[in-house]
Image (cartoon, rainbow, N blue to C red; front, side):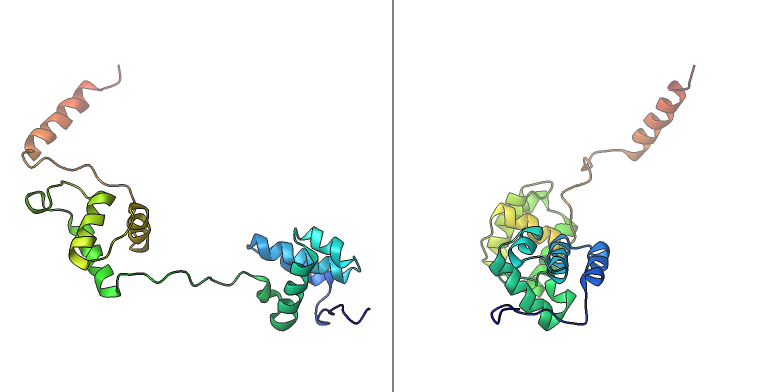
Length: 174
């Protein structure tokens, strides 16, 4: 082995890495495990990198991670991303706003749309979000985009029940 080539850990072999790859639910980790298994089999680093869909330098970086952390080191690490601009208390308040629904007299709408929530967040919390980010906030609060059909305030429950009974009688199989 040339001195510039980095050796792999000796507590794994090609078969063990292939078994781990078969059980892995992470596609990227699977590709990296198979590339390292090819290295254990004696394949050139360039050919092994091609097996994993990467270049030789990237394979070298993954070898370093594998040697330091083992197979778990071949998984992508979570990326930090931007911090949310609403505090936890504000997120709870937003969840309550969405849960209770709008007041037509105050809010001027009968159901929340993203653009309405965008306006409410800006007015109450002084934070400006795009409509797309409102979707992410709602998903973080476990709300979906599906909403129930609104009830008209003048609906009479007895009339609805009478209609249902009449409808069932008429729809008997012939």
